[in-house]
Length: 347
Image (spheres, rainbow, N blue to C red):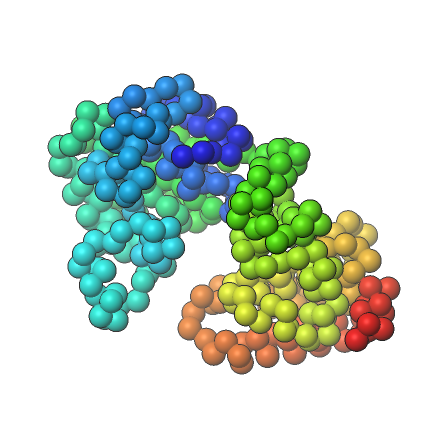
């Protein structure tokens, strides 16, 4: 398992900790899950070194193929499926029969299974590990089920929790963990890592496209990979502000709704920043449309409200049409920028 260099540095620091529960906290795209899994591997490795796990022993191999008897991955079923982590046979059967849908929260039944796991003697010498990702997916019942075991785990049991929203965790969960704030890579380091990944996984993307992905991700390398997987290019990113402002949702209509909403929020954020005399964060200043601050404020509040329900079942076409109209209305009095004029002249 090859970690990005900034994650490897953090792993060395984490290995020096003596607590039984570690919380990895930071915004999305900084590699919380990769670091949590690397820490679990090192804790369970039969021949660990100062860099972490040896990557060659039977324990490391068992983790690679998701069969290690002393590692319990506690995560929502949807997350487990996306990460290739096996579900328990009963849950898998119920999902296949369409009796239930893969959960986006950590069910209390799964949490009880994790607690039961900690009470069984470990199969290998190093002990046992419970990996919880993302920890904010613990609902109140699940979190309370975990509390006593998290505070006083039996035997040689350790916990590593990864979260992108530490503020959503119960204070009683946070208080039982040693919190590690995820560190950001330097731009040159993150961009160099992206270039190596790009050469293998995304050969069609050029340097300008990766710069666009990096900017869209807010300098978070793994989030930049998520943008690349959607097919984001430099040209598309340059055109998006004006196209969305004119109600043209076509370029992003096939993206997940949460990602579409995120783009709309990024556009609104940058338009508000520019209106207040600040530099935009995601888009180029000359690509941004303008609108009255009051109208932008109303749009921002509506977008925040929509974010709370975007994962609920909706009719995708109607949702997209409604937001295209809302964006067009918000920016209807916008003065066309030079970029918009150029875009219309090419049409």
